[in-house]
Image (cartoon, rainbow, N blue to C red; front, side, top):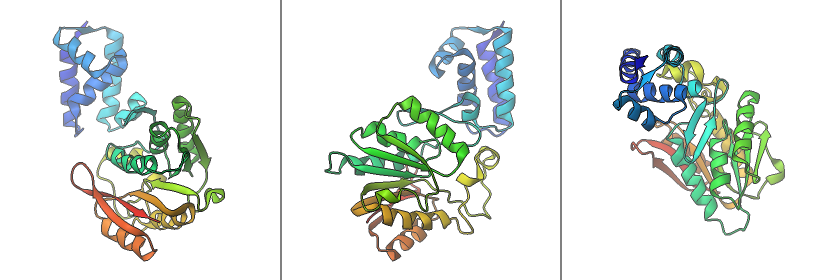
Length: 285
């Protein structure tokens, strides 16, 4: 038997040496995944002198080896937590980030404020379904449509939609540029976290650079190709007075605001994330 505290300390040291940003937390989460326990329960067992049997110790070590190689934590556990959701994720789909929770909140607030008994929202480029499922579950009287172009990501979105059991959510495999023509002029909220990294910019984190799908990352030479397509599609879909919410890079707020104003959007506003970085823009049709 191997003491849990010793195993965690050794694992955290290996993760730290590999440059993993949160080594102790990752070690506890991975051990919790092996043992079927929450992080708090792992910590409690560690403090109380708990031990691992040989099988669990080997399984934990195998996960640490993969995390040291900078395989995403969420790929190892199979779960990404987003707002109230536990989403299934893995190869082929973008892992949702905490900063996108605030983008979802803007969309949720706008959708909940619509006077209609059945407001309509569209999530363009849904990936795992994080934003769309949040909209569908947190504004249950709304109709929500989630559009995704990647068949690989679409499989994950379907799995997560089934788990959420949201009857008001419709998934659509399509390019956002020409999706949902039957809804033209009737949508209340369009939200998107589109690919926005310029082609010449390489993401710093290995978890992103090597494991997130390129189709979810890169947005052309200046990173705004998909934002331009999103602008056109949102103008087509939204009713007058409808709300657009876009996530983007922290250096793109000014360019996106100028693009939207030139297209005739009103009340264009760029918003900071929880770290004060300008990471989202809203506008009115």
